[in-house]
Every structure is written in C-alpha cells, then in structure tokens.
Image (cartoon, rainbow, N blue to C red; front, side):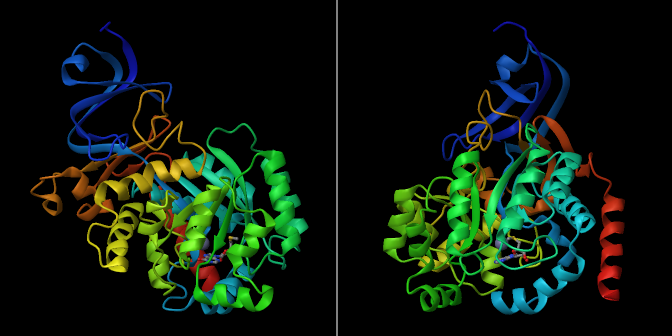
Length: 439
Ligand SMILES: CSC[C@H]1O[C@@H](n2cnc3c(O)ncnc32)[C@H](O)[C@@H]1O
Ligand SMILES: [Zn+2]
C-alpha cells in the first residue's frame, strides 16, 4: 500500500462497524480526510501511514455516532417540571401552558444547545427534532456542530409560534430557506399528531413534502387514548385515517407507534414507513410497549429516540438503546428479542436509513462521513470484557463516552465539549429556571 497522508488516523482496540452484526475489528485504524472515512486499516497497513493527527484509543470501542430519531431538544429547559403523569394530562395541564408562557427564539436556542451538550456527552451525533422557532434550532445546530433534522411543527391551534396550520407551514418554509445548502441542517415537516392536525392539513403536508422532497415526522399511536378518541372522532383508527390520506410512505418517520395490530404492522411495512421507538418516554408516560420485535420481523425500519427531556428525562441514547433491548424482552417474555447487535444497529444505521442519510452515516465504511464515537471500556463498570458489543448495550454508561466526531470534527475530547462552554450551558439553564419559577 502506498504511504499516503491523511488528516487524522484513529486507532482503536475494537471497532464496531455495524456493517455486519456481531463483527468487531481488533486494533484497526480509521484514516480520515476532509471529514470522511477514507480507509480502514489493519495494524500492518497502518504502520506506514502518516497523518496530521494520531489518536490511539487503546481501551476503547470506536463505533458510528448514535442517531436520536425523535426528540424535542429545547424541552431540556422543562426537564423535571411535570413527572409521573399520563400523556394528555402532562401535555394539556403542564407542558402546553408552560410552553405558552416561555417558548421563544432565545428559549429554543439555549435549550437546544443544552440538549446538544448532553447528547454529545452520551454519544449522539444526529438528532431528528421537532419543535418551534426553527431558525434558532438551526443556529444552535451549527454552533454546536451537530447533524440536525429540524422538524417544523404544524398544529391546528395557536401557540407562541403560529396561529394556524397555514401559518406554521409558511413560517417553516421561510425559516428553511435561510439554511438551504447547510450540510448539517435539514428541515422536515412535523405535523404534531393525528389528534392535533386536520385532514386538509395532512393533505397539504403530503403535497409540500413531495414538491420539496422533505421528510415528514409525526407522533402516531402513542397511547390507547389517542387510538380510541381517534375512532370516536373519525370512525376509524388514526393509522387507517392517515393511510387513507396518503401519509404512509418511506418519507414518514412515525414516532412511538406503541399500539398496533398485526394488520397495521403489515401496512407500515408495505409502505416503507420508518418508526422512532422511544422506550423510556413510553414507559414513563405509561403509554405502553411498542411491538418492536414484530415490527423488525415484518421488515419495518425501527430506530431509537429519546423524545424530549420533559418526558424522559435524559437525552441519553446509550441508555435508550439498553432500554430498547430490555423492553422488547419484557414485552414479549422472550429473552432473544432485540439482541445487543440489533439494538446497536437500530440506534445507528436504522436511524440513518429513516433520515435518508444511510449512504453518509450510520455505520463505519469507506466513503462515509466520520460521525464517530469512542467508548472507554477500561472501567470497573465494564470489567471483565468478554464482548464489547454486549458491554456497549448492557453495561457501559454515558460517562464512558470519551470522544465524539461529527464530519471528522472532534466535538467531545476526553469528555470535554470543544464547541460548547459547559459552564455557560449550566448558567443559562439555571437562569431559565429562575425565569420560569417567577412566572
Ligand atoms: C410538534 S412538536 C412540539 C410539541 O409536541 C409536544 N410533545 C412533546 N413530547 C410529546 C409526546 O410524547 N407526544 C405528543 N406531543 C409531545 C411538545 O410539548 C410541543 O408542544
Ligand atoms: Zn415527542
């Protein structure tokens, strides 16, 4: 092999590529140039290579960055405000009133930066978000250096951000136009849920998404109440209503999908819908257990999300991956449901596939962007180490995430954020706490 020069050479004790379940590369190196993985080198190949920087991760797993497939980043500022409630009580009596008083450009910017700090420190490199004040969210993404899908919320009723569905849509498209061409930022259309969005609006969203080639991100079948009240109001289950409207397609990311019949699982499989599974939020709001094992068996692309920090209350994709594996087992009484390698694949490649960026991120392969994380396994909590894949899912904590790169840029180094000021993030969060308590 010719003695090539690369920007960075990262050598790790173990590399989990996620290209093939269960495969681990020992003591291999990744050569990175211009933010991309340009070579995966065996020890003897790496010996003669030169690079701008060298990093040896002797006790670490190097793996693709985690893709958080459903979140509301700015809701970090409402963390711990309303716990131990069911979804509708939580939303209508606590969260929506608080959002009505406090959400603004500044709230979204500060809350999103706080979220990104927390997400980097737990190994997330991509967030698929949905909230309000999208330009503030996009500015936060660029400041932090996080790959971000900015979901533009659409509802029928007024909030601090919009008056009605048309207003939400026109604001979304105007804000999107300011960020076209930004590699890290992609806008999506986010009709909130079947119970807050009318048929005509769903039709407009479908047309616009097709015209502008945008993804659609929507909460669907999160609770039994949602399904039952949908039947009362529309004489059909919400998913059937959405299918009749033409919403089901590969551009749809359906968040939650907890309550599904076997026929509905076949329906979403047939239409190529992706699902964002949010195990902790579904447990905490007592929404139920999504039929993940059946969905995977039917060929549905299921990724993992945290939901917002007001319903989780962590933005910790490593822990969420563990929860996804555990909840599948308890939900089916089958310990083989969602094994560790599958859980990792869901948290990485499946998320990337849902977002249409599987060709760029989600696994470690030559040609992909260097969205990577390193997890230090030389800790008491992960000793002894028979199987790094097992440890990533079942034993390691987010405290063990040592390094994170997005597009080859090192945004977390030895657990220190490089693009964000930790003291400033905490100070701003606390000043929001004071403001919220005063009102
Ligand atoms: C359209 S996104 C913003 C909107 O959604 C609310 N929200 C946060 N978490 C959930 C959830 O799990 N189900 C339904 N709605 C949720 C958030 O508070 C915003 O108002
Ligand atoms: Zn949500």
